[in-house]
Length: 460
Image 1: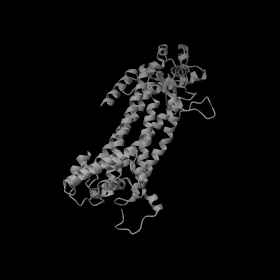
Image 2: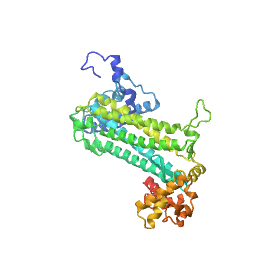
Image 3: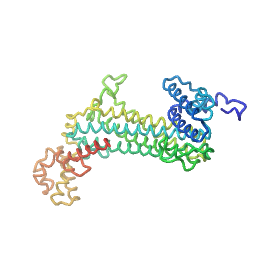
Image 4: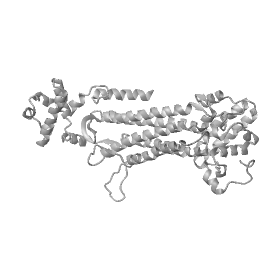
């Protein structure tokens, strides 16, 4: 490739050090897609003949078949995916292959390829997020009647429907799906092809034609920016890092819920493993691996930021290092979304209703206390006074080793005369849950409404 300028060859160590084909070969499909569009434009302006364009199309068809069948010979000495494909095309069709790079640089070529790849993978990530939402919504619908403790500061706070808790997860992942869609939009917004190395194309290629062929929004407005811009990659990896953070939080809940101390759920054999020494163990490995991989993906985001922060205009070889970060971040996020959807499948997510009820019946956490404060407000007692009265009632119950369920009218009167006997029938957790009738609340009707909205959103 460099014979015209250099008399010697790169050292073998340098070849190995500088090559990227070992990882950027996964851009081959996008490289061919972009090259076909560019070849058509070269034919339109008279650089290629119709016969040469037909030969290029035929050559790319054969290369596609070779790559898909595993017969393509990727060569380290050709550095990257672009030169490997161009070299093979020239072997197959001769001089027409040599003409393909006319006016084009690997700088605008790789920027285009990577954008096309991010568009495709971003759409896959969005679809995987939607599938996870659908799976979780299914488990929420199955468990609409189940009440569980909600926690703040990892202390029992208020009762909520399990379905309400699960729908909270879908809110997080719905935002992620939207973020993936936005990242796809960023990648599609500008087409670098035609910018050449940094100054623009020397031939009359039409950016408007190219952008229509490759389904971009606009051709690049500045050739220098377009070949060195990787904001679209940052946006996609940021979306991955945020999604993984959400998945890690969800995984942590499931790990806690599946412990013997909680026992709220049992995870299926398909997403758990045993111990090499303790035969009784059921380890939540799927969730633990998701939690662990989160740091890896967040690290890729930091790697990209650090890579870009000191680069002068325009393209620099440093940008070769962007791909492994993007590839691995998206690979891991896509795998984790799919695995977490498997975790929430009907076969692998068993809710232990009796164990949950036993936790609630224990009265631990005094979650019924909020009922008392709310009831007092409805009787005309200022909330701060009601808060004080309820706090004294909790202290009373705690001192006597009682549950709220054990309270009598005499106990209520002993704490404060404003605590009337009719309060006793308001102390159930079900009553407290059903009091949350606002749009975002945990009352049954509200949760069913949200599930219906989710179902509609998934159809759109």
